Image 1 (tube, rainbow, N blue to C red):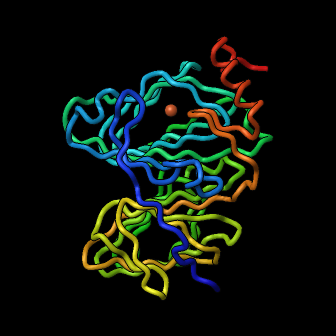
Image 2 (cartoon, rainbow, N blue to C red):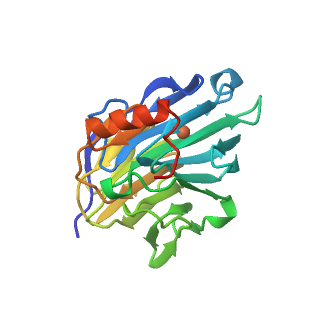
Length: 288
Ligand code: FE
């Protein structure tokens, strides 16, 4: 059994996207700062409506999946297929853009805290042009496990072995077999999680003291940074003197070329040119 250690840290940078939503971007802030198949991770967190009220008006995607996970607040999603979804505190949305989707994600509040994450996961070449689909996942659909040493694990996607129980999350759909957990540890608590050796994995601490312990080497990772993990069979984390909250993401790498132009992620330049042309002439979202 080999423990996974920190192999690279991507500190998040402050940026904005959509209509001008302020956010912290770690993975994907530059095109060489990714972890196959993860393309991007954004964290948004503000008590100030000016930072989020503009939301994400109509915009396209092609070739990958976007996952929104809300911690606090309320957003409304609408897409060209006529789908509409309410994203409230603790809920998630899993959208497979596939061939193409045009959607908006707009805050439904003008005061109070808005906090959550958006994650982009790549699709393999053979699935980039499949029909768009999405799933709304309500908080009560996501199992929450109480840990013996204090804390909880919430399962958004995949299957996890936690304290000798196998827990299955509500999302199992993708060929990259993503595991997406929201883990909260009490101060001083230890946590061990087996992770498939075939998967790339990272953690993203978003609450707690500045540094957490990882593995047996007591490596440290700052909050609001993506800690990319080495290969291995399991993760071991120790919370410090404060309670700790972090995301754990793991998925099977695709080992395929990536060509990205904004919200289009394909394998070749020709496919990107096609996506841009399709979007311009209204064919992005049409069936073949
Ligand atoms: Fe989007």
